[in-house]
Length: 506
Ligand code: B12
Ligand code: SF4
Image (cartoon, rainbow, N blue to C red; front, side, top):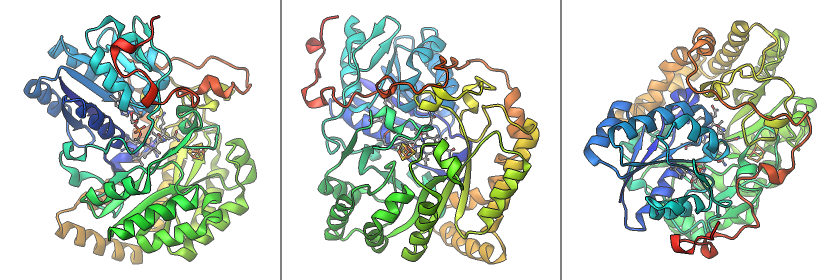
């Protein structure tokens, strides 16, 4: 079968700071290709809708799969699905990915018949089975499949993360992927899942709080096959178990691989496992993203971060001593007033690290979705990108964005003082000489993308598709099991039905 996988357009954040390869979709594409299908990938973070329509005409796919990792992309995906069915009525249209898994029924409803199936959970094995079931009435029995006629059992987990290597060869214009000065930059996965349970996050609910690892040998082989000089490690929390980080590092050294790395981790993990991060600094670790989330104990407790301000400050000290550049994240509560923004600005200016701000956003699939007592101020999917306020703001909305953007601007300028500008100009021109201009473009785009007027006006666009509001749990904590997409106790893909004929009867 001819299968086209499509990643939707970038959200606000990715218009500026980074653009990364759609790793999950590339892994699904590899799994489907291994079953003999002819597969293509189109990434709309780089290409346009017109390119998409052209691809439908040229390739004439028999199946089109959209990657729905981000809730804010749902309206775009639904519209593209409708275009697909209009142009190719026989084409099988499906959607998968992180956020799509939590709102599968809604997506089918918005599709009004244009979407044949939403596949919940990991896509590697589920998509193989769905491709086999196209045109068969038993499709609604495939684990993880949701169709207008019914839903299959819980999705199965991949038995072994080494099984499929991302189909990077299917990507086009890979030089467009970058993060800051790591330009160009590829992505890789060492582990999957997260053992913590922060109330605002759905990483743990998606994977049923499981945590799996790829083998050091497979990771190193994959790393060796990556052409880019820079690599983003996508793990939610890198190096939870230091021995795994050392084992991967040794395999990388054995193969004499030299790259620059970017990773994300927790402050407590960095403090506890300092040695493995020091070792990786030697291997090329340049940048680290730490989700500190709050600057006081009260805030940390509210996010159930299971960390403390003391640990956060110690982590920054550790990173400085190791010599890794840190970007950290703080969660802005829509309830903040001018004074609170001021306090955060002062704090952020007092440390040398890059500080990013994201707006507190309850997402389907998180505990916060059910326990947040404030009523959502909007049901427009497009605003759920953690750069907009979807909860009522204490300040008038326009003023909230003014404070937010002003704070982001101050924090940005911190690194673009005269000395910083000089460094940046040097880096940008060296990259430009190599034909890499992503970083340079980013420098000029900030004011266009982050703009209080634009962010405020976004709230007044016509809403074609509205999110289904959460059922209320009256502030109570829902049972973890009811939040899970994957059930960690369910069979893994090796012993789950892979063929249509093996699917259980209803
Ligand atoms: C790495 C990462 C990023 C990277 C790169 C993402 C990329 N290029 O795809 C960067 C840093 C760019 C990023 C940015 C953002 N991210 Co992010 N990100 C992640 C993270 C940590 C891992 C994603 C990943 O690569 N996993 C590894 C791969 C193998 O898994 P996967 O992508 O999920 O793919 C699997 C399935 O989802 C499925 N699948 C995926 N695509 C498809 C397609 C089909 C057809 C099918 C059937 C299946 C399928 O199968 C895959 C293989 O099993 C996740 C958390 C998480 N654990 O998932 C958050 C996460 C997805 N991000 C999140 C957010 C909020 C953001 C931002 C909005 C943040 C911001 N600061 O503004 C931006 C927006 C980015 C954009 N689209 O423009 C939220 C999503 C919230 C939501 N419900 O919408 C998550 C869940 C984190 C969280 N705390 O809850 N992110
Ligand atoms: S925020 Fe980080 S540590 Fe907390 S559950 Fe999500 S991925 Fe895990």
